[in-house]
Image 1: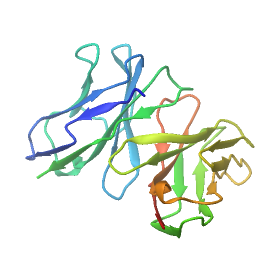
Image 2: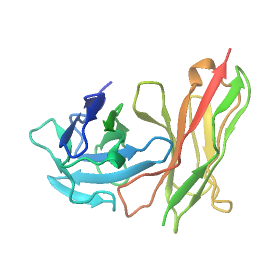
Image 3: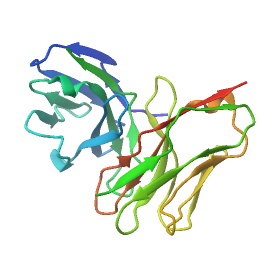
Image 4: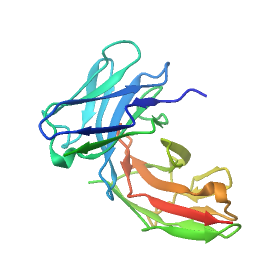
Length: 114
Length: 112
């Protein structure tokens, strides 16, 4: 069964460094999402992406964050200058179409900012 | 804004016990409601969903009924197995938005 994959599974970085989290969505899916879960807190929506544009974003998704689909298979989340509070599990998801479709999630990347 | 509240865990049960995980929501209008499950080391998987009031979602022996009057979507299973041990997330999506709004998750451990 097709699945969403994410790399790396774990990343440790120093505060102020840039990180890029990578995702490979399911191949025929057109909508892509990033969520995050800070330890002990809720899973929070960050951004949705369709047709090479951001279709929706949350207040968390400020100028430090960006997303890109650099080729036909990858979907990336970049954090330009990491802060301690960016430490979280980051989940990528994809869906065939938009609002009415099931979102399929990857296993997550655990980011630790020191 | 929209929000989801689910019962705090962890929940520990013996095999074949009855499971209820409570979930209530706050939203205007008629959101779609979901239960996702996360097994160790894996991503969130959709377990079941309901898109309108009084709908019952079901899958793998789990059930949840969309109750508009109590704004609830409680997850139930009549007889849990060790393999049901996982984290369960309740979530909603408003029709006009793409995003899912999640609860905190409830860790279920089933002992043999």
